[in-house]
Length: 187
Image (cartoon, rainbow, N blue to C red; front, side, top):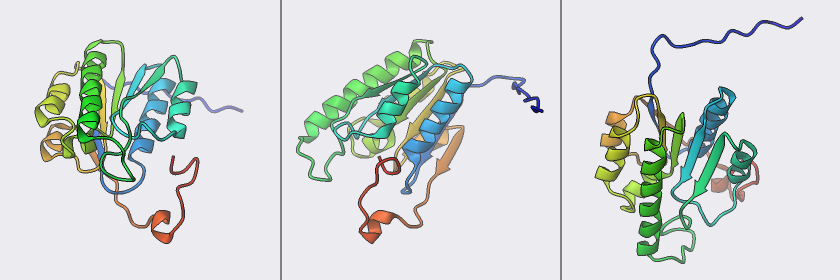
């Protein structure tokens, strides 16, 4: 015998600004969970990745499986300044600026229920994007749009403007024990 599932509706719908930050593993994964949940409610999702672009990851293929309700735009050339980064700072900044322009377009389009800006916090910390640009995205979002900003080192002003801020704390990581990143868990 199946149990009847209740469908809750808020009395007042509000688009939230959510920040997922911290040094722990799982910020992008948390944002993907939000995307999965939103698609389950029939919402359209746009996922814009500011960094990580030169490394294939499972999230890219998983978002493709949620199409056409979800789309992903990989904008960066990878991690800036680490892991043998072969690109100039100016190239990273140029890509991040293109991601900002795309984010503004998608946020203001009215076509999405959720827009996720993955690694935008890192991009701001690394000066690939500027604080006024990020605050403009937050302040300019439509009232019912949910905006999710991920990445380490969220700026205090970004956290102040958010409705929900979660910090993921690293307790222990397999990499510290000499274990390489594992498919399906780390990428």
